[in-house]
Length: 239
Image 1 (cartoon, rainbow, N blue to C red):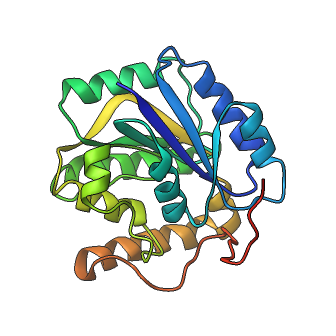
Image 2: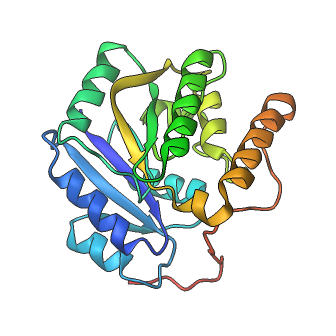
Image 3: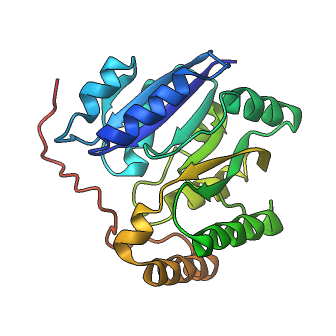
C-alpha cells in the first residue's frame, strides 16, 4: 500500500516545516509527500524541497489537491492542510490499518483545536458528534485530513474547482456514491484556531452553519471565493 499525501499551501513556511517533520517521523514509511504551492512569497517551497517533498504549482485548495493528485503515485490519497498537526508517530499506521479493516474507500477523521479555549474545544466536539450522527447519510470530511482511494478520486473527477466553499464536503458526498465512506476513530488531527481568530468565532460559526444549510437545501456553493488564498492565474511559475 503506497500513499500519496497531498498538501495545498500558500505562505506556510512555519506550518509546512512542522507537518513535514511530523510525517517524516511516522512509523509507516511507504508514502510520498506532494506540496501544491500556490506561488508562496515566503520560504514554503524552499522548506518543502529541503524536506524531500515533491513540489507542484498549486492554486486554491481544491485546485491544489487536484494538481497534486495528478502526479501522485499512490493507490490511496491523503489530503491534508499545511497547518494540520499530528500528535502520534503511529498516526498513519493506525488510520490506514483502521481504514483497511473497515473496508473504506473514503474516510474522514475527527478534527480538534490545537490551541484556543474551552469554547473552541466544545465547538469542535459538537462538530465531530454531528458528523458521526449523520454518518453515511450525509457524509462530512474536511480538507485538514481526509483519505480517498485513487479510484474514488478519479471516478468523481477530483475536487470540483467551481465550488468556492466546502469543496471538501462536496467531494465526500460525491465520493460516497462510488465508494464506502466512514469516519476513522483511531486518532484525531489537530488544527490551529488562526482562521477563527482572524474572522471572529461568532461570524465564522454563522458562516459555516449557513453554508451547511445551503448545501443541504440547494447543493454546492459556487459564489465568489472567500479564501484568503490570494492566488492569481497569471502568477509566473517558480523553479
